[in-house]
Image (cartoon, rainbow, N blue to C red; front, side, top):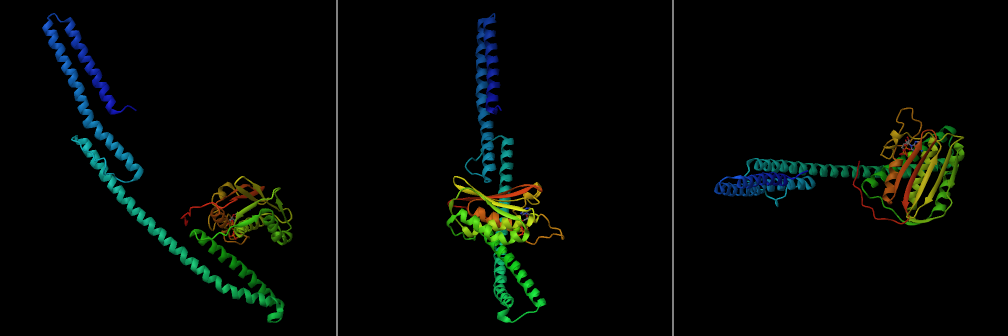
Length: 365
Ligand SMILES: Nc1ncnc2c1ncn2[C@@H]1O[C@H](COP(=O)(O)OP(=O)(O)OP(=O)(O)O)[C@@H](O)[C@H]1O
Ligand SMILES: [Mg+2]
């Protein structure tokens, strides 16, 4: 694009040249030498006047326009009006343009200020809400300890006396429901701590081979009961310095999901890892129902479940994957999923071999 200044100079330069050229032609072709000379001097004056006029117009029009353009560009970057480049002009249109820009800028500044105050208020309210529900969940967890204790005492008949078959079934039902409630409250507390950036990570040396074999052993009884196979697939042993319990928690959530979504008899769950230079890439793969592209994007959001129908057979609250995401990111890694409907689903998560500094994200969505 051609700047206005250059355009003015080109136009005035060409005009001056034509006037000067005509003056010379007149001088050379004039019959009377004095008339030619007068016309030449006149053309020199006019050409010089045109050039000087251009310089004047250029300074009084283009300079303030350039300043205004710079002010506008600075404003669009910082959303703040600057007092440094005050525009002084006698050109009415430029004066009005600048006045309008300043008044618009002041309004935008005000709106942004009010908007920021609202955002801050909403963040404070959200934080207080999370802190309150965190306190409530904690209080809900406390009575569960004696409830579980007494139910377990009732189950061991030698402690509180013999139960008949109906009583035994009832106590077993209370036990299963209490365990579910305990898990749900635990998951809500973990999610709230992640939201508040208060989840504490305890780093220690972890032998990955031991960790993976420990997980297989832990899930063996469920695998046998559901007649599915759980295998480990890795050919290298690695040591990392991270949080063993939290990595176990991520694996447990992913393995439980995998077990839930494979068919009894033919189900196959594989856990494993790939050793990279700075991190370890773990995976949990299953040959279950799979996840469609549409559902993948919301999978790691709190309380998200693909099947929300009343006929839904699986329990759960939809917090498991949100917790996995919070933990992996809190440990400086990431989590993602690849899936082929009715063929296979693989959840991957990367954990750095050594802790890295993470900036706490303030996202309570
Ligand atoms: N391996 C998988 N195969 C198919 N769908 C899956 C798989 N893992 C997760 N999903 C889908 O993702 C949803 C969210 O999983 P998430 O673990 O967060 O919650 P949940 O298992 O329903 O409950 P919980 O909080 O007890 O874990 C599940 O309800 C399920 O629809
Ligand atoms: Mg789950």
